Length: 253
Image (cartoon, rainbow, N blue to C red; front, side, top):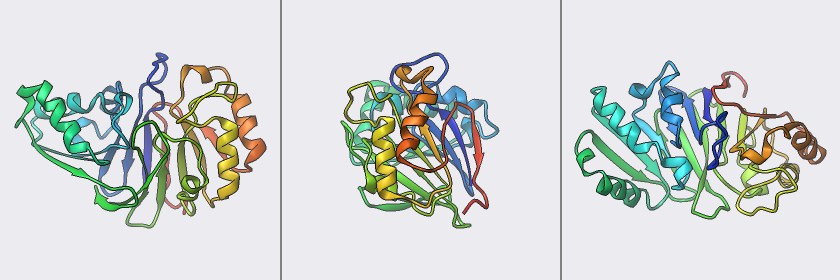
């Protein structure tokens, strides 16, 4: 399995990071979330938007879905004929609502819209996918992906720090987790380094590496102190993700 961080930013652009998007490559490529700028980032990969026929959404906030219809249109213009969109309850309504605004896009490609319940599982792009509900201002799902070789990767989506969510990564090669703000920002619905470190320490997952993502502008220039705060609580390999970074997890677990 290979993952590429297409976008590691948030709803407040910095010019250095685009909004949330992950390319997960097992047997076939899977796009996880599709925020603003992700389509351009995808076009810079060897997969491209032509190679994506499955999209998985963690939730429906704009910084996770705003490039969904642009992706649909780009695939249509490139001559591609289908797209599967999977997400939490309400994904049917989301897609139907977007097409209601952009009626000319109806019927351009064959759309298969699916919904996954918290705690549910499905098969997407040759990967086994297990969902886990998070704590956020909208219903949001974290996902554990497992390929045919047994390698697993976990993406938190947006969430406050929770030990049960960190435990989802036990035995995984990597965990990509929301760490939106430094400790001195009073915030709910997202973690800070100390709260995430405490949750990781409480869960103590056997995970190869933790990548921090969904970074607001407040984190710029403060990565070292954020890592210090987190690793004071949790003794593990923790790094900041960056846009365009590809990580090969094959053989890691």
